[in-house]
Image 1: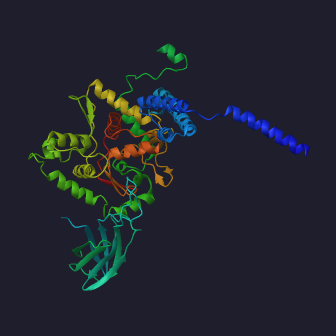
Image 2: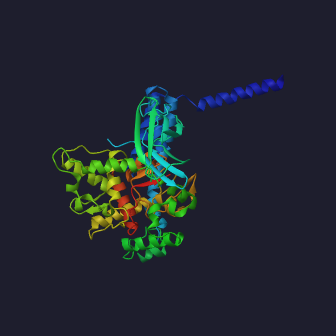
Image 3: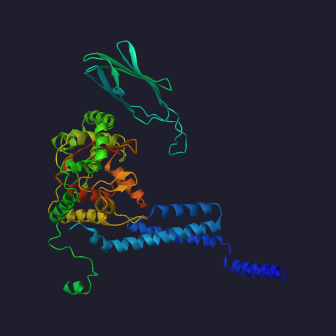
Length: 104
Length: 103
Length: 274
């Protein structure tokens, strides 16, 4: 009984800690996340290097905004932004790295 | 309008080898278009080869056969100059036929 | 320059006087000749069939009745049909458009851009009051199929005029070819140089040398005809890189580079591929 009580209170405390750090996203946060993702994708587009899954995630984020699913929108937009930034990195690296691949 | 059937038939000894390419969409009826609408089934149901008044081959085709199908087979008989008639009929009732000469 | 070299060469490799298109082309062709010594220069036009015996056997069977036959006939008829204004395609091309495919793409010094055969066809149409054709398949593939057929066997003869813009277009195409892109982080070279002749799933990767010679192609995978543009866009998508619009400058420059690298390889189009 004592063990069970201890377990339950530990679980309760853990739950409390986690619920404090993971709050539901707001509309403003969701829209900001999508705007960030769009900026990252626009940067990738400058290099003609938008990634297909990044575009898919961005589309999913915009769909989630339309459905007022703010958490989903943030999740998808975060993914899209990360990929957009990585694509820009990839293109910048390749601006010099491509020379190494040339058949000489 | 050009025929949808191309045939090449070659007599060699007692056997004639036939090859045919048929232009047909062979839509299975299971594929959707870019709007998400099902493309209706439109495929050949029978393909018949006739020589000297006899049917030498009937192919019973359906949705599993791909677009613009190609067939190759041999039959006993046939000589250079003989006529070979190829006819197809599809599930929408459309048809085409071609008379070819065995080489 | 010298100091940069001492510092570990972190700076990009300078375009030296020996780094010319001619030198590139020789190195490129020498690479593929030594990699595939049993393949003649003409056979490089046959892509996977030149480097895999099993595929070649299937190809010879399918070529008894080329699946591109219907498109070729359609293209022959369309090419010979006059526009509404009485002119025809023949008026837009040298030699009436017969036997000219091996000269495309070319660098147009008047407009300062690379002109592909497909682009030239649509410019011809628009100059004569006709609507342009979509680039990837259909009638565009049929007409280019006919024009390619009239050049069958003629070796690629791409020129880079003594013009810095032409050189820049060539360099841009070269950079595109060797640059990794997309989520899968592949470059064209990853598959068609590094892994040429190897399998990627069930396909055999064609060597980059001569890879455009057979276009437009009837690809069994597509169940229809496809132009160079169709292949560039689907390839990009396969690398999970968003495809560029048809005849985008980057794609035309890429075609320019690849075609120049294949000078001497004969036109084998229209073709058929798995």
